[in-house]
Length: 34
Image 1 (cartoon, rainbow, N blue to C red):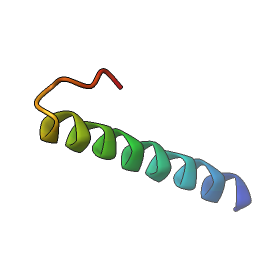
Image 2 (cartoon, rainbow, N blue to C red):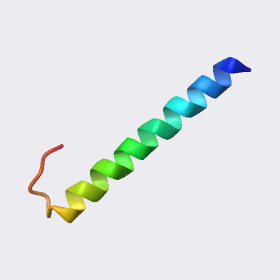
Image 3 (cartoon, helix red, strand yellow):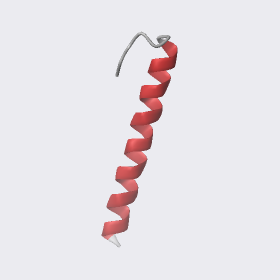
Image 4 (cartoon, helix red, strand yellow):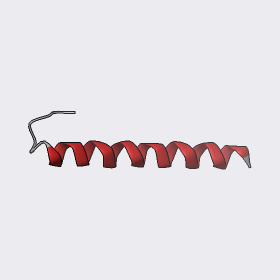
């Protein structure tokens, strides 16, 4: 099931980027806009 693996990896990568963006946003006190 290569299709499922691709979907899962894309999903986890997007989750990672969203959490990274949120952490940088919180650490900078909301002064950085993505």
